Image (cartoon, rainbow, N blue to C red):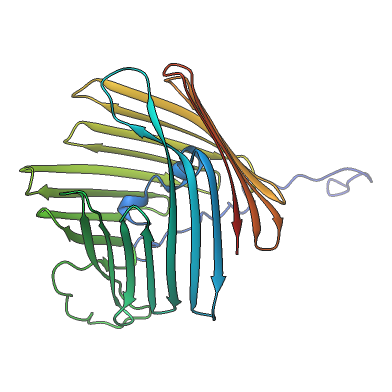
Length: 331
């Protein structure tokens, strides 16, 4: 009779006989590869630092074939002139920019030339399945203002068998299963190296060193990044005095909130900002406000296939500087 249970009664399983929930095992020898060291604040920068502009901007891109395209840009608006006074000095300017793009799965060439004499170039070439070359340069008419940077990136191919291949030559970027390291150099005797590694499925730690031979300055920095499906938190500190913290909270697939803090413990300067990133069906809206009282907003709306309308606004009440811009992108 003790085994009889009245109808409608729920029988709770004995805690001693219930199977414990199996914890998900983590294979620390097969962690995912982290993002590059220079992109640890990527999500926060996307929300807090959109490409704000002032005046009129028109961009037109015409594809000649599947790999080659030409671009034309017209930029009309004031340009700020450095001055020792608190008021902002602006002069009206207008530029035309011509560009050529060649995009292939193993080769990317991008060039831009402006009417003021500036020339920008970017190259990305996959020399092999594991080795790629990245370079960017800017040439100007102003003395000592031209610069260039070269990177050699190396990443291990998937499904490698042991023993592993011999190490790549110096100044290469090696990408293993759970780490990245990069060596780069540029004009002015600039050399840098960075390393970042995943120590858990959500946490990555890294560091960097650099040497600027022209200015006889060197530095070292450390960084940490924690991310999951709902948030991304990053921290970075360098011997130059810079401390950078950022946090992004993903409320949904379309809405995220972001905040950052920049502090220089040598000059005692500190700046913080909060912002949002809202992706709608036809547009994307980003905005922020910082501790200096500067508020900004950036709207990208798709009017039709290949036709986008852009609105940009930035208001700085302290400096009495107000910037408004609108643009159109075709292609």
